[in-house]
Image 1 (cartoon, rainbow, N blue to C red):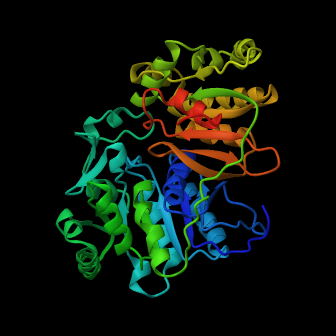
Image 2: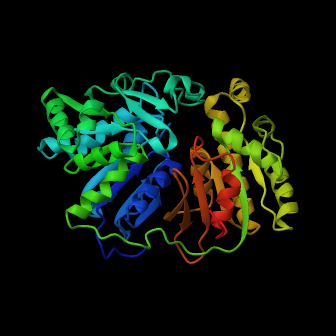
Length: 436
């Protein structure tokens, strides 16, 4: 990274690594040259980009730690000259009653407060209609199901058992939480801004915003032009580039998604236990080689990493991509958690897949497809990735990326719930420069 010759316009803080690439993907599609950093860069480091996304691994850590990391990211982004800020979390609002969405939002609002009411109010909108996440009357739907009936109620770390996001967020904050109803969104930008004013006057500091289609997100994005902080899923970014363009601050870049070509071998790693990733693993295994990581075997001290790498080598010798996965059904995950504990089970899977990723890199793998937010975070840290250029979309919410530097890696970092059943095959074709 070199000293910046152009000050960034938009600074974003994401609470996991795949969510960061998802958000960056939206900004690139809007013509913003976007760089994603892995963690907070050093204070002397600068980046030339229109938008910068700082990827943290803060979704499921203690709230106080998430707040501290998010404030450090905010300080660095402010030093880059950013004019507006986004706090990005999952489109299924992954959190617990202790946080971390509410506490981090409170802390960011406090840090940005400068006496004007724009800095004392924000929206919370995780809607991502392209992937079936919509909000109506404050209730989050995943496809046709309410959040608490979508499978998310079985999430091993953040089980979501209430679809009413006003209630969910209110349990996480002392700030008053309100709702920007669909009635206002459907009437357009001015009606939404009037709703903001009414909510502020009623003492509301955070408001869940309804959205059922992309057009609603463009309305919300334009209505948020004067807000210092916006929070939500990646979809909320759809309307933000246009604000900077209308203000004469941004020129569209036709090559915003251009990435360098990367040579080398390929592999797929999967740690997510989501329905989507389970289906993707099953589809791959029908025709392609795969090795299952057993966390209980790893806990017993068995040489799981070495076994996985030996399996991989037989296929790398033939330049044949393979899948190494710890993905399991909810019942299998619960059985492991009952034996090891929730935290130990999760950390063990992440550490094992991270060690396997390092071994694959040593054996010549330069193109990685990774499924799962926590898994992606562990893998990019293991590979010492510091920043990513964001390329074209592979599937909704999942872009191709390439590391910065003289010897880039090509990465597709996928949130567990995202992607079509054939995503692994599709992503490898994309990273190899083939048809999408």
